[in-house]
Amino acid sequence: MTQLSAALDPVEFKRFMACWSTGVAVVTSAADDGSPIGCTVNAVTSVSVKPPLLLVSLAEDSRTLRAIHARGRLGMNLLPAGGADLARRFACGSPQERFAGVEHDWTVGVPMLADVVTSAVCVPRRCFAIADHVLIVAEPVWWKPVTQQSPLVSFDRRYWSLPSVAFLGRH
Image (tube, rainbow, N blue to C red; front, side, top):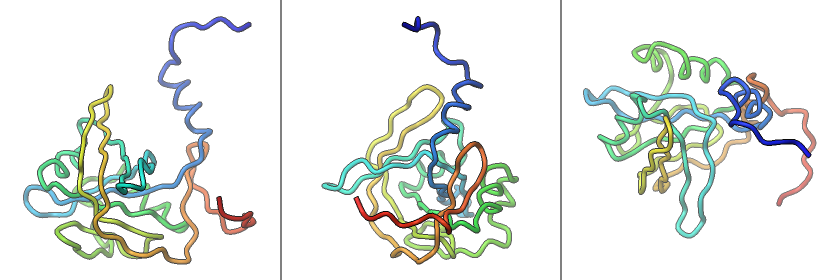
């Protein structure tokens, strides 16, 4: 039997979590000056259907998190397979340049990216500080129906598309 030791160190934990494939999204809001703001996330999941709630995790020092708290709204934009450059831009790019040349529309005060798999405007209902992140439980109040695009997927710290994967049925 393997003995338990101290928790995984951050490098080991990142390597472990890289084995979990997940969709990639850009969370958006509006800064104090009204300009669009956003960041790339892959920590998104549904919480419940009744009422409809989702959960997103943002770093506690995130500018996007501060904007969400101030505005009381966030945009969830699920990226298509061709969106790897956009994901990188919103993950690592200069915050002032993230929206430069990126097509977007404003929906109920939230910048929503064009050409995505689907998107939703959400209202935060609860926030929980956990370690160095904040979990936001949010209620979608508007959404754009799903397109026929394949999603962008994160696996092994790289971006992937799934166009050749066989459809195996619904769950």
